[in-house]
Image (cartoon, rainbow, N blue to C red; front, side, top):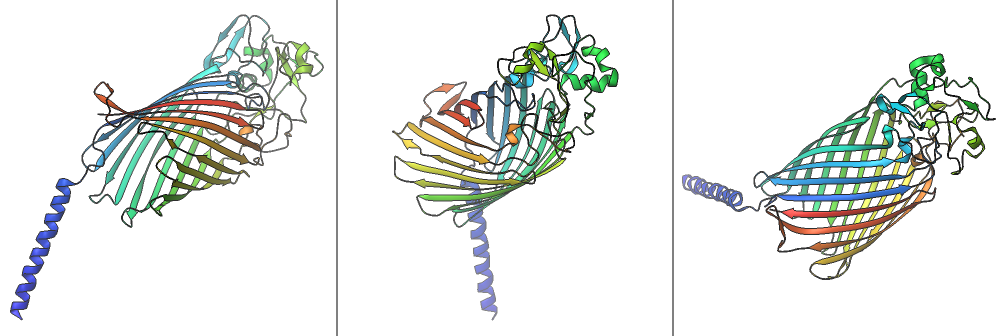
Length: 476
């Protein structure tokens, strides 16, 4: 008996020693999660035009140009940990947002929040042309950091992230984290992520409503509107304009909470698929303070050149702008639920197939479907081209109505066509160049690959956009 116990003790010691030896070997020789510092530079140019400006109540120019740059740097902290920093800046000019203050004049002084406070000549404006106000352009600056840790066997990963972004009237602060577990020889992957965003508006109101909030019923004799002629629908001067439905917002916060789940499976050597769903909840100020609303049961009032009143809804109107009845009003909460599916299939050494489908629904009455297909074609060891197509359809929110179709008796209303019923088609192609040996160097970094993409976006409500992106990846 004692002999058996001794043998068992010796065996246990050998096993224990062997396990520790294996752990030490793994720890000593395991492959780092990220071997070198990697830097990604992404530049994009976006241009659009349309006829349903939300700032002008669902009618008017939607011309917009945006140039954005993002730099992402991933740094290996050790074999298991990676720190990723992302910085971005986006600069745009917009005919739509410029008409927060649409009233141009020959001599004027611009005050805070883009509102003109003095004028010495009659102001003119039109929803079909950009104004020269401060809100005609803006910049979005963002910064985010992500820290991830992988277990020794690389079957468990946790990460934490934090982000902040700012533009003229909006600031966002976010944080979150997630876990990923791999099973079945890394052929199966489960991920769970959560994020919280604590945002704050600095509300900017349309000029006429800003003045009404500031001066009350005497607003036509003070501030910007002092000495400015207001016309009714017949082109007669009047002092009857009073947007009595308008009140300033009682909150400036917008908080968002999300939980995301994904499941990925390698089925065969050629087929891989994944499914995902997200649960998102938003609370606070979910409408946009400077988007105008015009009621069908309220009289119309204008500033500018009265001869254009009869052509107001035509692009031939170059001199008159209609005064708002109120701003967009939407509920203070929103729940969103997107569910999606991806499938990638390796056809042969030259062709691959990538597909994507997503169904979305929320408690504002919107449901949508997205389908995307991409076919990478490998031309040689360095070049790959990939044509792509994306289809999207959605129905309208229960709070949406086009220009001048809301009633003043309603509680919630928007004329933002992003919340309307529409269908989009997006066509594009991309080219990818890979330098396996990173022969080209810049500041000590070798160029790993270059990506170029072009997409044409067409919405059946008249919105057309073109997007060009360039991406560069460098490794140290």
